Length: 453
Ligand SMILES: Cc1cc2nc3c(=O)[nH]c(=O)nc-3n(C[C@H](O)[C@H](O)[C@H](O)COP(=O)(O)OP(=O)(O)OC[C@H]3O[C@@H](n4cnc5c(N)ncnc54)[C@H](O)[C@@H]3O)c2cc1C
Image (cartoon, rainbow, N blue to C red; front, side, top):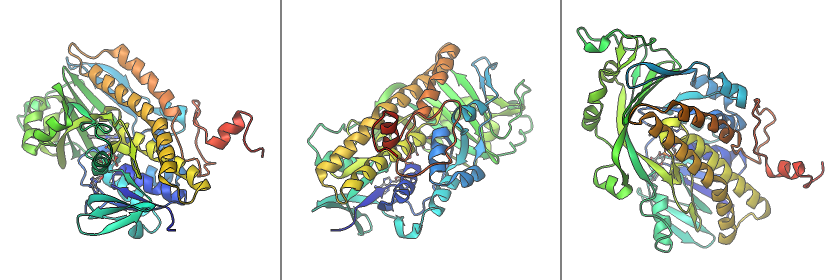
């Protein structure tokens, strides 16, 4: 019988971390991505929180991670009247608390690092492979691609994002009603982009360069501007400033409604959407318009939220944005996706230890345990992100106490994060808020049971 093999669909950040997690635990895999390259043509950066960095550390990538990313050191919040309403100038508390800081990446560098550090990436990562069908066969599945090629494997893992094709096949193969036709809703849309640092010199005669009391735009500092129904978020890496303009919709839209209206904002729409914000001062002598004019890349999208009701069917299972979607304002989407990938791999390694070629019922048990561990956590993160964004864009100005309280709630969630059970991690960093998650053998020993060493 063929060796157990996972077919990953999607080479986004979660699919690529999953490839590492499978490699680290000795599970064979192939990853198929529809784009022609793994590094994406990106328009915005990505933050990784302490628990996301810890997972990269566990697979041996902390030095490379630190080399390609920047620290987040401060956030300045400016309210609707133009006054600074809150200033965080010390993010070292996260490193003190959890042993790791918050770091910002440009997506292409993160993807390239993940690709370059795989063993034999050319043999395992296949680009220009758009999934078009999944067929069952005895003891496994066959994934079919638009170019006529196919891959045989034991399971298919859909890491194929919000509009997951794997999820469509799960819905096709399962009883009607088990999978929602519209798993996600969208209450916000966003325009995002990036411009080079140092910032441009304001144009002559530009109203945008008006004097204000804001500090200059500096590397590694985040700036947020809050208005009724809108939030402008700017974060600087060493070389660029990235921005996201969140715009609250009048009503939540379902997937079908968004499909009817187009998936993304076109760049013309983006120009119109940002027009009211071009004169917004975002740093000393600098407005958003100054940056927008010099953008290196930009895009727009409806921002989805929600959790798919069922994360698995047969030999198919979902991970990352395909299973759970949070708003990006707290930067938890990919972090949560990494954790879900680790949780799924933990279930698979535990199963494969006892059964080299598990049957569908055994896989169902493992997938259900994975969903049970992760779904509630991701729903909590989803609600926290939504509450935070609603709080900052509230009519009448942000509710600062509620937002402060929400921040305090985040750290215990981070401390509970999953890691890979089967990968030794003696160099794990710990802060004053120790990691709560224990691999099953540790947990059994802590409870007085399990193998005595
Ligand atoms: C503006 C913005 C800012 C964000 N900032 C952060 C942040 O700071 N921190 C954070 O943790 N998260 C952030 N997020 C969320 C984060 O981007 C997502 O959670 C993350 O990209 C999900 O990764 P994924 O691999 O699951 O899916 P995706 O990144 O969507 O990747 C899916 C991949 O699957 C491929 N694919 C799709 N269909 C097929 C098919 N049929 N066949 C083959 N391949 C296919 C796609 O081409 C793609 O490469 C942000 C999101 C947005 C929109």
